[in-house]
Structure formats: structure tokens, C-alpha cells
Length: 88
Image (cartoon, rainbow, N blue to C red):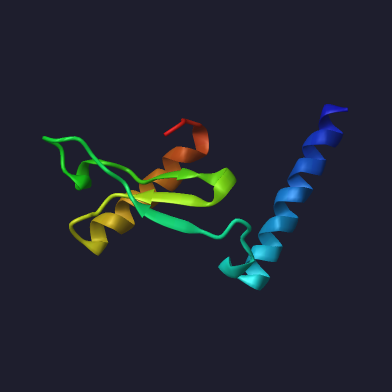
């Protein structure tokens, strides 16, 4: 029974990914929203990773000092986020 449920969930995810790939971000419901993530002094935005609320397609992105830092933080968050789930 658990294997059937896992396969069904996998199929659902793959199907949604195909729809997003074919139709693009416009197909997201609710639409993708990107907002500035706040931080607490004395740290700066470069000290934080971005965070998401996947159920509502909401990306909280710090105001990084460069595109290179933003790219590295997004990549790190994607890799590290595969193994955990945190509320933010």
C-alpha cells in the first residue's frame, strides 16, 4: 500500500513538473511571488539564505550585494533544502 502511495505521489510531482516545463511560470497557481527577506543587524543580507513557502509559490530573497552571491546562495539553499524542511 505504501509503495502504491509513493508511486502515485511521484507521478503527481512528475506530471506537475511537465506542466510547468511546458507552460512556464505563468501556469503556477497561485502565481510566483518574490519578496525581500528582512534580516537582523549586525548581520547583512549576504549572511542569509533565501527561503520559500512552496505551498503558495512564495520566494523570500535577501537583498544580496551582487548577482554572484545571489546565485551561490540560491544554489546552496536548493542543495541543502533537499534534506530538510523548516518553517520560516
